[in-house]
Image 1 (cartoon, chains in turn orange, purple):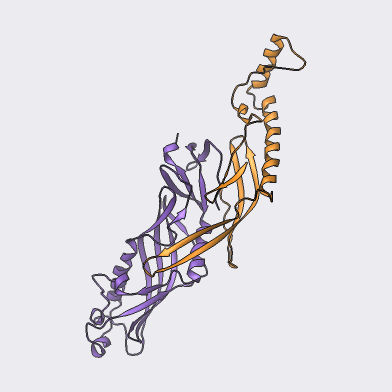
Image 2 (cartoon, chains in turn blue, green):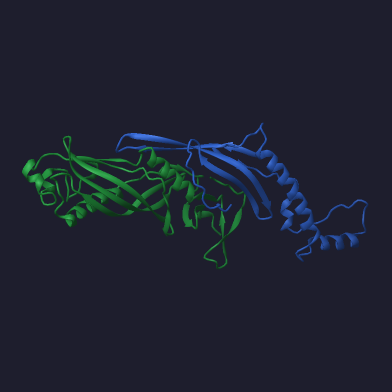
Length: 139
Length: 217
């Protein structure tokens, strides 16, 4: 869920897809159809196996895709628009003058990985025709 | 401009050797945003300054004609020593580049055109490339920028009879006045950041990295 608070963009990640089990050992409590206890133990070991390419990783990857889709949809959702605007105001107390500079932020995408979320923007001064692009900032 | 990561900790490479983990919300501010913002402000006259006694007086130059008798001898023939001087310095640079000089300090160069006047008579004109070393001081929810060093390359021009005879002394007076830049906050201060208990700022290649040092593990 992406939302605004005091002009900052924030988000909450519901863990209903249980993403944390990527790094946390899990117990399989139910299999349908039911398995014998020994088979369930074996499946649990297989599920938690840390060989770099286990079942859990594949499941997490699928869950990530779902989150990614939801997140990108949210970035462009007109019902819940992200902040695309911010301002900086400088008050020059010596010369008794001030300027307010308005920035426009265009969300261009997001990436959700096991170690976190990144959101990508292109930012420009709103009424500036001479904006020069710089290096991409890591996120 | 701002990116917020939902990470409890994010891997952050340090000098190419291993990783540190930082807690809390991390924030990155592109130096290109800073460069464009300074350039935008300069082109709108925000970085222009009036040369007044109040703003730029130093022990070497107190904005009276007598202060400049040795620099511009003609002044002694035309004006009493206590005649007030004022002026202006303007910049409208179209290209600002920030160069990192320390972990929390960057430098920028601003070209200025300056004039000094007595009443409506121009008595001095000079061009100056001003190099400012600016330190980033993150506060709880905003940034403060302070000048820690100001260097200049100045070229003085003769204005009619008012010829500059002692360039070394003129440069010294200019340097002393520029020391006033170290007194307070400069443009950019007040830039909002995400609130942190113990904000730390680190300049890396192309960006300013902000994190909460109290959450470091």
